[in-house]
Length: 125
Image (cartoon, rainbow, N blue to C red):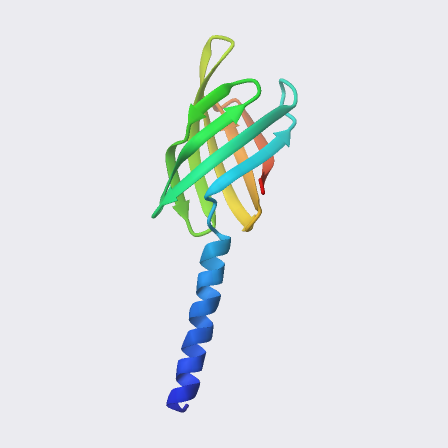
């Protein structure tokens, strides 16, 4: 392979890698409405990514606002914890998800080891 062909090949690979990494960045605002055992819930997630750490805030129509804790990014995989009080009972809600596109994350959330709830968050533009 000539030197020029090698340079072009490397440039194409780098450009594609940057596009893939950019598509997997959950930084920003996300919204989701989903059914649960206690009724429909509406959530807004504001994510901030620093390296492999995810922080930010979560706001639910039934639970109010809380910080993102224990947040991690591993490629397209996202995990974090929401700690809330609902009806005077503290709840730990763990999320695990996959970023399926630049504008969609498919999550499963585990509510206090009592219920697993699927939801899809869409990027707010």
